[in-house]
Structures are given as structure tokens and as C-alpha cells.
Image 1 (spheres, rainbow, N blue to C red):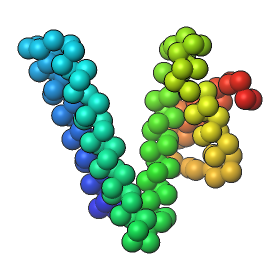
Image 2 (cartoon, rainbow, N blue to C red):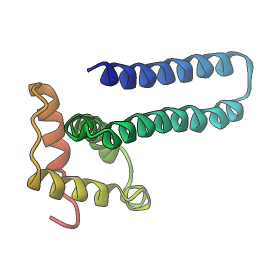
Image 3 (cartoon, one colour):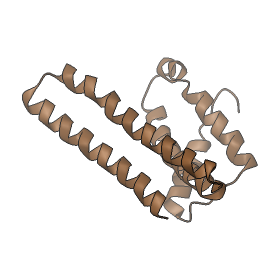
Image 4 (cartoon, one colour):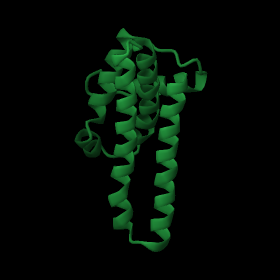
Length: 135
């Protein structure tokens, strides 16, 4: 449970740092500088997440690692659904969004996951029900 808190903490710190950098850049620097810093913040957060998950897997804590990854997939799907509807067909295809939804749909059909939160389950189901060229 402590590791989940650490991962969540790192993600929150990265988001807060990103927001702080964004506000500072918005006030004092050109938008180009903000855009240059954003990928580094997200990459640092992803790197930390990957490292901590790999440690869990290497120490045999597979169930904890899978649970964390399932929760991250929930979050990714919750963000993907509204983003998918908000862009053109060309942008969806360029971002491989339909393929991502289809891949998650097939995975979740084989490995159902209950987030124990009806709102999360509903949001994930809404994204997984988005029609793609594959279904």
C-alpha cells in the first residue's frame, strides 16, 4: 500500500510541478518554453512509475503491480474517451486512439476489472463502448 501511495505521490508532485511551471511560464515566459518543459515533467513521472512497478515485479509482488497497472489503465481510458470525441477523425487516426480503445476493449473482455467505484467503472465502460472501425 505504501508503494501505491509513493506512486500516487510522485504523480501528484509531477502534476503540481507541471502546473506551477505552467503558471510561471504563462506569466513570465513565452508559451514555447512551457511546451518544452511539459514533456520532461510527464516523462519523469512515467519513468518513476515504471521503475517502481518493475521493482514490484522483480520482488514477486505481481498482484500489486497488476492492480496498479489496472488502475492506471482505468485512468487512461477515462481521459481517452472525452479526448476521442473532441477531435476530428484524422486526428484520432493519427493518434492511434481507435486502436488504443480496441486494444483495451479486447484486454478488458479477457481480464475484467472492477474499480470498486461506480463512477470510475461507468466512465471506463463509456470509453470502451466507443465505436471504432474494429467493432
